[in-house]
Length: 265
Length: 306
Image 1 (tube, chains in turn brown, green):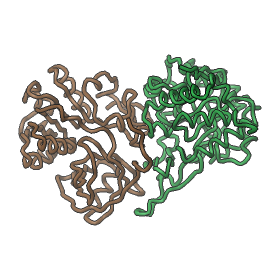
Image 2 (cartoon, chains in turn purple, cyan):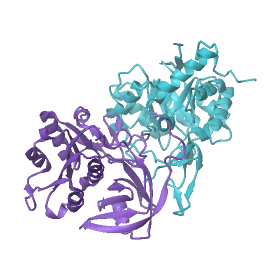
Image 3 (spheres, helix red, strand yellow):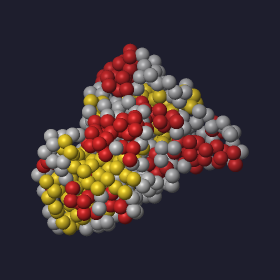
C-alpha cells in the first residue's frame, strides 16, 4: 500500500446541478463535479450545523447521489435544490471487484440498489452479463427500475407482499434465478437480507461481494467506530467477500452505536 | 535482526511501537488486529464512567501534514469496556486508558478494573484531552496540583503500573511531569494532541471539526512533541512514551534521542495503513543496524547535552 499524501482527505464544496424525485422518500442529486471513484465506494457528506454521514454513489461522472430521507443529515440534504452547495470528502472505501467475473447477479434491497446501479453501468460497458434484482417491501419502495432497464441489464423486481413482480424476499428471488448460473453475486441492502444471501451463496458455492454499513465517524480507518470483527468497514470495506463475513460473529447479528455499544440488528 | 525490544514501567515490549489511545481501540478485535500488524503494546480508546456519544461529526478534519480531531471521548462506559477488553491473551501488553471528570471518578474506575480481575498490563490516565468539556485540559487536569491529586488517587486503587498522559500545551511541563512521578506514576506518555486548533471551511463559512476546535496530530506536531519529550526527560527519571507525529522509523529514533523509551503511533495508521507498526519497527532496526546500535537503551536521551 502506498503512503497517503497530505490533502487527499480534504472537503470540497460543489453546486447541485439537478434534483430528481425517485419516490416518496428518495431523491437523486446530480452534482456539478466528476470524481474518480469505483462502484461501491462512498463519500462523506457534511451539512454544516447538522453533521456528516456516508453515502454511496449512483455515478461518479457526473457525481450523483441517490439519498433516502432517514435521519437528520439526509433530511437536511433533501431540503437542498439546484444551485445549493454540497460539501463532501472522498471517495472512500474499497469498492466492488467485478472485473474477473463475466456473469453478475446484483441483488439490491430497498435503496441498497444505488451502488449496484453504478456497478451495473461499469460492468455492462465492459460487456459483462448483468442481472439485477430490485427487492423492496412493497411497490412504492421499488426504485431505479428504469435506470437499470435503460442500460440493458436484465431486471427482476420482487416485493415482499407481491404488489409488484416476484412475490417474496430478495433471497427467494435470487434463488429463483439460480445462484449457480452466476460467477459472483453482488449485494447491498438491509443486513439480515445480505446475511441470508451470503449463506445461500455459500451453500451454492458461488462467490459473493457484499456492501455493509456500520456507524462511521472518521471514514479513513483510524477512529475504530465502524469495527466489524477487527476490520474497519470504512477502510477495509464497505465491500467484503461473503466467505470472510460469514466467519465474523457480528455479521447479520450485531452492530455498534455511536458510543460503541453492541446492539442487535 | 537487531533486538528492538524495550522496557517501560515494568512492561516488556517486543518493539517500541505503541498504538496511541483513540486510534482504533474501540474493540478488542481491533487491538488484536494491531498485534497481528506488529504493535508492541496496544492502548484502548479512553473509557469514561458512563457511556458517551461524543461530539457530532465531522469529528476529524485534515490540515497541512496532520489532523484536527474532536471526537469527544465517545465510548461505551467502564462496565461495557471491562466486558469488551476481558480475555486479553497477547504477549503484547494491553494498556487500558481512562478519562474522568475528577480524581474520585478515575479512582472508582480503577477499582472496577481491579476488582473485575481482567488482564490489564498498565493503566493510562488521560489528563490531557483538549476538546471535551469536563475532561482533561478543559477541566484543569493539566496542572501539577491536579495531576498529583489524580495520579495519587488512582495509584491507591489499582496495583498495575500507571501511565500519566500529559498535554503538550502547558507551560510548566517539567513541573507536571514531576508531579506525576512523585504521585507514583510509572511512566509518562508525552503526550496528547497539540493546540487545540481550528479550521474554517471558507466555502461554507463554518468551523471544523464540528465541536469548533480540535487537537492537532500527525507530522505537523512532531517538533512540538519532540521538544516536550526532551523537557520531560530532563525533569523525571521514569520512562517516557514519545507520542506525536511518529510516522517513520527515523521519527522514532528522534523520539528516543529526545528521551523516549517507546513511541505512540496514531495518525500514521492513516498515512501508512494498519501495518504501520511493523513498517516502523523494520525501519528502526535498519537504522540501528546501519549506525551500529544494538539496543534502544543506547539511544534514549542521546541528544541531551549536545
